Structures are given as structure tokens and as C-alpha cells.
Amino acid sequence: MKKDVFRNIAIVTSVFILLLSTMLIINYFQVRDITPLQTEVVETLKSLNDANSENVELQEQIRQLDLLARKAYFVQSGHLKAGIYILLGLIGILMVCLRFYFENTKEIPDKEIDPIDDWLLKSKSRKYINWGIVGLAAVALGFAFFSSPYYKSLTEKSADESAGDFLVETVPNPDDITTDRLPGDELAQADASSEEEVDETTEEVSGETEDAATAAEEEVPVSTVTQNAFRGNTSNGQSSARGIPTSWNLQAGTNILWKAPIQKGGYNSPVINGRNVFFTGADNNTRELYCYDINTGELKWTLEASGIPGSPSTMPRVNEDTGLAASTVATNGNQVCAIFATGDIICADMEGNRLWAKNLGVPDNHYGFASSLLIYGNIVIVQYDNDTSPKLMALSLANGNTVWTKNRTERATWASPMIAYIENKPQLIIMGNPMITAYNPANGEQIWQVSCMSGEVGASACASDGIVFGASENAKLVAINATDGQQLWESNEYLPEVSSPVATKDALFVATSYGVLAVYDAKTGELLVEHDLGVQFYSSPMIVEGKVYLASVEGKVYIFSANKQATLINTIDTGEKIFATPAFTDGKMVIRSNASVYCVAAN
Image (tube, rainbow, N blue to C red; front, side, top):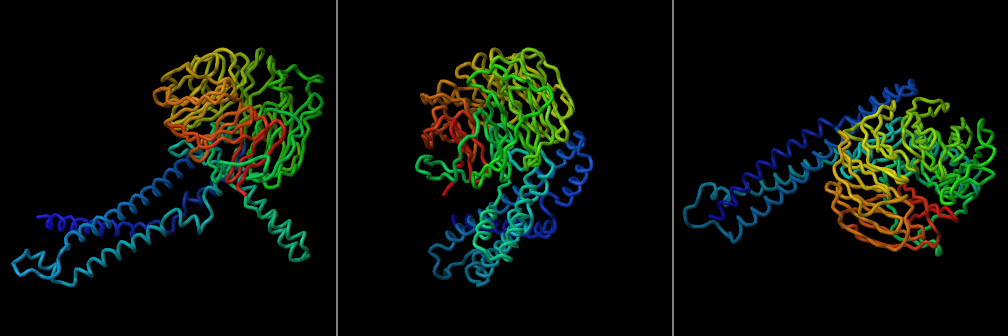
């Protein structure tokens, strides 16, 4: 009886293996000439975008087409993987059934047996059938590999690189980790390639050792993973960087690529695009924008914010914990913008040449202006909340002219704008007092608004899986359904003062100024974990490679698992105070302390 069961399962499994193998082979011939993400179409859209660089609405339409293309790409990839796994599983089942069916079968029985059994036992053709099935399955797996996106990525230029010239954001993966392929990545790669070709030619002509060393240095590959603004490309606390060390020693130099002194003080965070690391510094005499080389730590250039019409002759009064350079810069790989507590905003190219500058008026803010910039398409977004004339502005990256502006009724805040993609559409999320508001970043139109904050709002919002989270120490923690603006839940157990929260689809991480990392269930608001670390947190947590990186004021960097358990993986005592949020790219993390800026990388 058992043999009959194994026989029937083997027959049915063989039929499914034949069908699935045939489908995978057919799939190969259907997709072998299709370029992932339809690169030809992307190139056409790029040309259209370049010809209409000021048309924000057109850029939004192009972005939606890109989102659809990427969805199709990943759906096809997912189906192919599922087919391979099913095929392997069926082969395993077949092998097990045949093993048990022929167990203890040494010769043909003398008694009369079932005709099918007689055929299976007597005929040598069963061997050919088994090997034929296995062979067909192997061929199908081969065709599946050759039609997979992974194989195409080895032989064709990545479609992400082609699309990166004009797209502001790509579709988040299920864990809301952005792909971080943003404008300027390909420009940096093209520049790097040109530099390498020039260096190689120089080496051939001169044959000198010094030229060879220079060429080798500039041949260091440039990652396409960027962190173009405070807490990431959309200021959501997430990075798709890979290969980040979980241990280093700043004093001993272990896993430290380079370390450089700080030129002038500032609480802003570094950002990364291609070979460039940007941040600012200021004192009562000058305000400066810096560009460092991410591979060497060399200061490439400094741009002073001076000679700006309307700039105040005397510095505004600011709190010591805020200073004159608390706002993080924003870049897209072509331009970089910086703003200071004087109301001066400057924009430069990648060589440090000033493109434009203007004064927005000294913000009436009793601690000092601290909101960071954010680039969306061809505009830079400025959250200019203060006690006199609060407003939200979008300035053209080309010339600094106002594209749109929204007057606000909020009081002074220190939070920064972030962009959440809700049902594949961008929402500009602004923390305020008392409102959390969502706007359309293309035109500034309000989408929804929730009155839930109070006091001095310093932490920025975050979003995951269609939910926006906002919190302030003197108010509460709230979760908002971003599709309709309805509040889902609230809590007042652990609240941040300065550090901004970050979330996965399952867990929300909140770091307080009194040293507690609290983990909430993102869907219900249930408090899951409390880590009382006995330190202060001003730096915001970042989720990278399934881990939460969190730096304390005292200079200790904590690494936790980015799940509901929030298991402590490691603690690194750097010995230098840290207020800024680290920036990430593949294999590298840049940390700005009160004394230095340095790059963590495996060595």
C-alpha cells in the first residue's frame, strides 16, 4: 500500500516537473532580449526630462512610470525565483518517493504484480526516464539563470544607473529600505571613469611610479548608494548600504579608513554622494561649506557663505547646543545646498563654485535655526518655521527662485522635512507645533493634517508601510494612516527631544535624550523593548543592513538588530562626543564628532 502511495506521488511530481521545466525554458526565450527596467525607455524619459528641467509635474509623471517599471522588474524576478524553488522542491520530492518505492527491491518478484509496477521494475527505461526528468530540470534551471535579472546585471549596465540621472526616489522594498539610487550617482561614476582613463593614459606616457600610484588611488570604485540629506535621501532614517563594519577602534585605527580635523564647529550631519562628503561649519566670523574625499579624507574645497545681500552684519543669538550651523546640507550629485542660522542659503556645484546665494531673513527662533534641507527633483525644500513668519518654501536649484511657498501658522520648530511614499505617491511630511502636515512636494498643496504636537518640536517624522510616525518630548508619540490622515494610535511612555525616530514595517525605534532606546510595535503601539543605556541621544538612529546604528552624545555607538527584539549586537566607545547622525554608503560610514570627521571601513 505504501509503495502505491510513493509511486503515485512520484508520477504526479514528474508531471509537474515536466510542466514547470517547460515553462521556465519558454520564459527564457520570451525575456532573453528584454532589458531589465526597459533601459531604452528610460533613456527616452531622461532626454524628455532634460529638455523640461523646470517642469516638476512632468518629473512626477516620469517618476510614476519608473515606479511601474521597477514593480514589473521585481515581480518578474520574484516569480522566477519562486519557480526555481518550486522546481528544486519537486525534484527533492521525486527523489525521496523513488528512494522509498524501490527500497528493498533486489529482483523482480515471482508473484503477479500490478502492470505499472511490472513496467517500472522490469524496464530499464525507468532509468532513462529518471535521468531525463533530472536532465530536463537541470536544463530548465540553467535557462532560468540565464533569464534572471542577476545574470543580466553581470552582462548589462544596471538599469538603476541609467535611471538615476533624474529620479528622486525608487520604490521602497518590503522593509522600507530605500534603494538610494539618486540624481548625480551616474555623474559621479562618469567623472570617476574619465579620471581613471586620464590617469591610465598618463601612466603609459610617463611610466613614473607617482602617476601609477595616483591612478591606483582614483580607481577605487564609487558606490551608487548615496545619503543625500539628513537621515538619508528622503530623510527617513534608512540606507541600502552594504558591508558596514560592526566593530572599529578610533584610537587604534582598526577599521578606520581616515580621520580629519573639524575646520569649524557645527551640529549638522555629513552627507555622501559619490566621492564627496559634505557638511558645514560656522563661527561668529564665517560660515563655510566643506567637501571631503570619501576615499582619502582630503579636504577638496571650502566655500564661504559671504557677500550675500541681506545677510545680517551681526550674528543672531543662538543656543550653545544649536549654534550657527545646525542644519544638514542636501545634494543631488550636481548641486549641494547649505543653510545657516543667519538665514543665508547657498548653492554650489561639485567643484565648489557658487551657483547662487540669498538671504531668507533671519529666523525668529530663540534656540537658533536647525531645520535641514531636502532636495526633491529640481527644487530644494526649506522648512522655515519660526515665531514671526513661519513658512514652507521650495526654491529652484537652478537659480534659487521661489517655485512655491506655503505660509504656516506653526510656532518655531527645529524638525526637518522628510518625504514618505504612500501608495507610490510622495508626501512631504512636516512636523510642527501643533500640527503634523502632509503636502504635495511638487506644488505645496496640503494632503492631510493632524493636530497632535505641542511644546518645542525638535524630532523629525519617519514613515513605514503607509504609516507616518511623529513624536515630541513635551507632547506624545502618534501613528497616522498616511492614506487618509487618521490617527491610528498614540503613546506617551518614551518620547524623543532631538533624536528622530525610525521604523520598519514591524517595529518603531525611539531614542530619548535620557538614554532609553524604546521599541514599539509599529501597527499597535505596544511597547516591546526598553534599553536603558545611561547616556544621551541627540543623534538619530539609522537602519542599515537589518541593523540599527545609534550614536550617543558620550561617543558610544550602539548597534541593535532592526526587529522587534532589538538585540544589542555591539557597543563601540569612540572617545569623542557625537551629536550628528552618521552617513552611509557601501562599505563605509562617515561619523562627525565634536573633534573630527572620520570614515569607518573594513581594513
